[in-house]
Image (cartoon, rainbow over all chains, first blue to last red; front, side, top):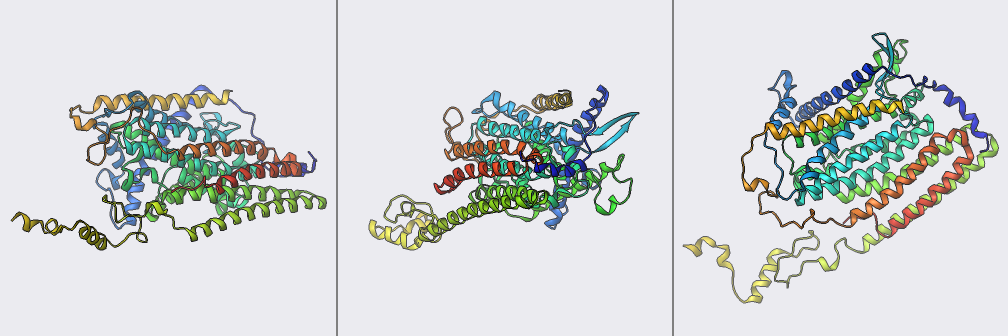
Length: 450
Length: 119
């Protein structure tokens, strides 16, 4: 506690102190709760439609255009159709957990949105209230907690189905979400460093003059990647890799139980996008040219800016899906653990050091130099590890010697790669020669039968 | 505590909706029994016999979970530091460098031992 840090207070003072937490009247709470619920359900229906339309356009198709104007009611029709489908509980399933899993998945998805601020204080029927369901002092932590709870739904769904594909999809999903949650959690630190608060409304207030994306550019980049990994979306949609494990954890789910998982996935997408808007893109504050207008950040207008920003982030989600191929699982985990985490840690230290330099007198210049030295040592650690691993890789093929197909084996050995695979014809010829008996009759099956 | 009341309200609403959907789904759909429907779905082939309890999964995932806990705890320590950083200045920075380096050593160890490899 050197006291030098007190020079930081002007930055904090720039953020207006939150008004003393005034209590909303009961009917306002009910209205806001219903509004958030309706918003999330509508956003999901809209997103499913928008995704299908936009991806269709990207693939030179038209997309759903039959139900309602522009096909807008398509997702509603799909939901109704799902409700009219048979509700199957597989014989091998653990029934209680199987039924509970979609509920566990859906509830936290809804709850996380409670702390997102849609706008400043407005007046509804003579009562002043924030356009935010509740202004928790630990709001961002609450969002993280809810996204962690959602993992239970996924892993329990996979486990309780009693079927191999869902099990694999469930554990993959869980590993993926927890891995990227670390990257996500670390990227928030960069935001807290400048905002000095965990409360979403105060973080928005701290961005009055400069958006978080400028303050914490690296944190923003890491968050942008982590949020896609966290929501299991393309190009990180490995748990639902259709070509490998069918639908992943929800393969065995039908009817409205399946719909609940679908709903949870899209709500999570909206939530992480809203969180990105709130933490990095100025929240409900108007973007630069509009912000010159004095009325831009009061009343109901901010709701519009917020929704526009949210829409842009959500569009990027769709865009990614239409553009990028799926990652391989090991590459994906490598990106999370070996790139995002160290980059994030270094960035946190660097940002903290920069802040210290900005506010301290000449003597404390020593400290950033020490920090810089520490960063260099850490960096060289990483470089060393990376170099050694790449050397090992150069010396040794990825496939171990025990796995190389054995031509002498009577059993067919799966091909492990073009480099280690002996020519098939040679293998067949060698085997035929060894057994002293021609299998040509098998190949010319038609002649044999004739 | 009052600020948690709206969250509880949203919990009730979301929970009610989810439970309602599950019950509604089991009532509105048809019920046509067919043994094959209740088998595990494996793209049409005969399902593999499953051990009781849903089977086991690679120990790799357990390692990931342990690493997650290590870093999650690091994050928990980083948050209060980041919020109170303005009041701590240089002292806070030095302390946090020491803490991050400590955890980082464990991280490098796991990396070197191949704990982060998937193949």
